[in-house]
Length: 253
Image 1: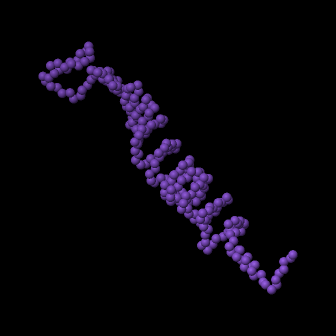
Image 2: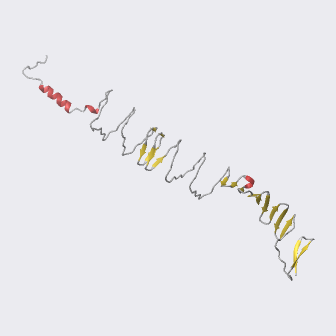
Image 3: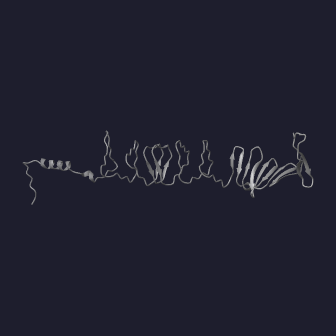
């Protein structure tokens, strides 16, 4: 049986019913936006209270991005402009910054960090682990060393003074010539071609054409006479006698 329209009544009831249905509808709970996009203007904003924002493509921000909570990043972070971090920052992934990077709060880097540009540290720089430097290290301030300094290769230079750990068991060379070295339990003092050997029980001093040997109980001069310039004479005093058989000096009264 077909529907019979009452021509004496209008259809305003259906119109109000449609408006009421549209008024209480929640179509935005499940909606899609096409190429036209969504524009928020006039000081408006989008507030997400209990949900989340998921971006599978790219997000472009031409203004300011402010984050008062925690930012967790597991991928690559690339910044070509200025980056200012005022709070604690934890970075566990790869981070590439080609512009200015300013951090005013505590910063923790848990992964591998590579710096290819110039780095300036104006505050305290603490390194708790091993530090390897393959380039030239210039220190213009005061350096305090509270532990051993191990030099495995190379030399230590302080002005014209050179410490060579590898030469003759270790040597000390002076800028004006001469030096000190130790080998086989003997300390060698050098100076312009002359040398002296000093051990725990005897000593030998060498000069051009003569030597002085100091042994327990004796001093032996080889290769030259003994001269004492400025020796004074005292009448009636002890005399010095030379024993040619032993090479010793004796005094007599």
